[in-house]
Image (cartoon, rainbow, N blue to C red; front, side):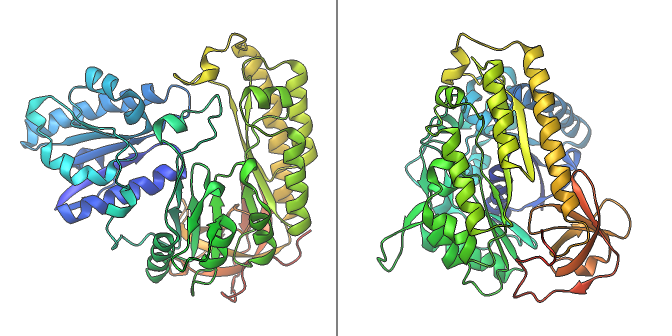
Length: 461
């Protein structure tokens, strides 16, 4: 058996892709390891969204070069190094120029070809095998049906790419145009996951609520709301989530799914990015702040206990003090259970990177600190409301301390408790005794939940 080490950067989509890379390589004899120094093949599955993403990759490659040389000289063993994902797609030529010891450069749409690329790789040639095409064949069609069990909670990719072309975003250039997997393929993969022990599935996509597909029985074209309803009928699937969404694709069918589907968790990540209409227009978001407010108002009317999460960018080119104040007002109006905030950083090749009114770094830092202070206060207040509640928690894994277990609440919070590894995969009714900034803590005593009714909470405000 050969050992495979995969380091994953970035979003849940990359986590899913890394799992499937391991799947496609398993028939060729690769088994995963947690130690890169012991690996026969190392894959860096990269993300190009954040600032200095490529430099972080080159830093890791420098360390891997040492391991590769040591394996050859001290153990007479070849170590293959592959760079995959969005940095590979966007900067493949730069990788092969600066790091000629990299054996393979693989884009996010071609990782299904990894076995073929491994067969072609020649570590002694000092020449990378590069595959960063957008092939006509669909990568999901080439993935093995027999996947390694994913555990109690698993990701399932249903949609890729984006046609929105936000002016700050590289996704349309690294992941391509929007593509929706067929409903039959998604349902089949979901059933396999549930059969292997998965109880919660999170549907993934760069713009997941743009998913649409034709049903096999010619029952028209489905949207994500209809797909969620079909998935909810799978025996043994107790929880559903989806991420990441765009406000333009929050249609009525999807919003009413939050009211009608008990296993759809009361949590939604719906990025808005800014509260200023001027900045939203500059970002090419194609919605206004009040459009977003109306969506949230409708969702809360349908599902009053829904917890909201979002993304925010501060310091976008041309952002004035008033524009930033509009973002603060929107955050105050909505009230988030969690959120992610970032300083704008120019991504090469995106329209915003060439905008003339770039904001000073100090101003961006001050605005980020002010926004994060408000978001942190909202998150802690939401968590504090959970104290004294009894809620169903899916136990996912052991915690960082001896005798500690951790799981997820319906609202996506991490929950910690004293417990036993035999509980992994169970949904348990837990009394929340303490709320912290980023987590909840439960009393040691637990009572097994009725696993057919675990999407509600007792005592919710």
